[in-house]
Length: 99
Image 1 (spheres, rainbow, N blue to C red):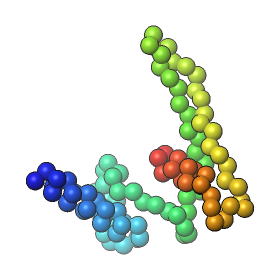
Image 2 (cartoon, rainbow, N blue to C red):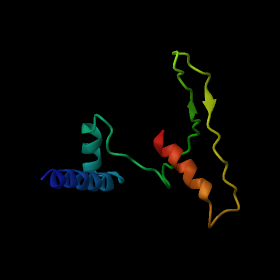
Image 3 (tube, rainbow, N blue to C red):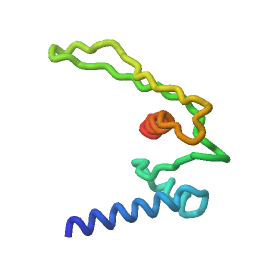
Image 4 (cartoon, helix red, strand yellow):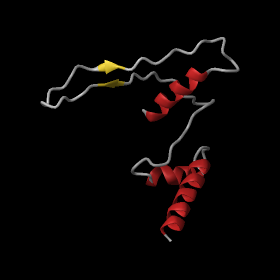
């Protein structure tokens, strides 16, 4: 029974996410009531593609409570001539989606 409830919940979330990718009355209703921002909105292409630049940084907390300095995770820059095969592009996309 639990599996059925979880499966139905995930299916509903998928359908709501798919419908909310285009501007329509359902999308506006979902945005107004999505207080926890659980429904993502992806802008892969025009008219409003994602154009921001992010930097992923981290620091460690040692056993004695001391915090180390911030370290930036180096993100590989995509090479413009890799039109058909560009694995580093997936890494950049994942960083963008996580932030």
